[in-house]
Image (cartoon, rainbow, N blue to C red; front, side, top):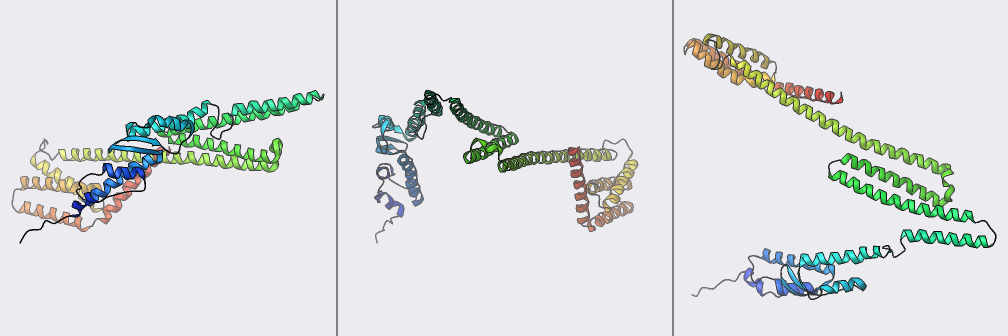
Length: 391
């Protein structure tokens, strides 16, 4: 019979007609979807990728005229903007740009007309006058009132003093906010350059100052300028300052403890490294007398090797970890020199059997005794390092 060609899901995917209620996504699906797909997973990934690009465009309010490729498009127009912002964005209508370049230009326009230009026009984000202008208007209001009072023959210096005091407080409060903002930036820089403790302390100081200012403003709005004489206010201020001092001390103690712990660790590591070097050197010196470089006779080397093994064997039987670590090498050296001096007869056999019996005795001790003694040794080193740091 005739062979039938099987059709896979991947073969059917290019024939699927996709559409979306989002105009930009609908256009992207028609113009950017590939003509073939390796798998259903690739097909899904391509759709998700287009969706991500379109979401970015929709967030900017872009209406796309044409997608030239996966990273370039031609702008039709922008939706949802009015006034100067709409006029500025209209300069991008009809232009072919990369998506990254379009987003960059959009953000530059948004920054200029949303922040820079209003600032230059002396208008805040809330649409009110700048603080400087508010202060000037306030002082003029009190001056006009003083002039009216004077026209009636009344001394109005108290009005002028009041207006000047309020104006000075407004300027001082704003300068404090600006200084605190600068301190916060400084703290961020300190953290970024490795001085986290300094950053935490500076942030705590800024927060403490803001807490005191907030308390003062609350009481001022409640009682007026005489609030500072109120006993309850004074108690609350004292409690707040006590709490802030405790918080600052906690930060300092925390970093002091971390520094001490780190120093103790460094001391411990240093002691461990030095002890290891000295142990290696000691073992080397101990083994020189039985090495090829030794000037001793074979008989003397034989005696020295067995003495070395015997000393460390007795220590290991008492749980000495360092002695245990040397026994294998010392037993090999001793047996080699036993064979040289005693030959291969019954004397060597007896020496070999004696060595084997001692090593088996060590093995029968088990690991617990060595583990316990090594743990004590390491703990003693750690305590010693900690005491050195505290001194």
